[in-house]
Image (tube, rainbow, N blue to C red; front, side, top):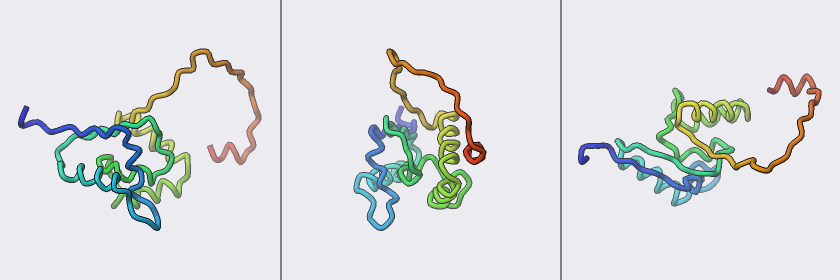
Length: 128
């Protein structure tokens, strides 16, 4: 209806990943994505991409995700990056668990594999 909040769907949203780049200017796509979100504050937003985010800086355009208690996204980004890849994985798992992030996987139909057990070093065990 007329009184309902609009929905914005960013398909192939990874194309806006260049919002937070060091030593350069954000891409026009990233700026447009952020501007649209700001211009319709009540809109629901869905970010769609088959390309996963491997670096926190690539999420800068996803302003509706929030800052999770940090003062800014850059503060949040710095904390996660300083904590390492494990923190990024935990963050991603949290987004998936709450339904804020969905990803697809390829079919393994017809794939073959072999299980092998390996001994892990103490250093490797501490990391994970």
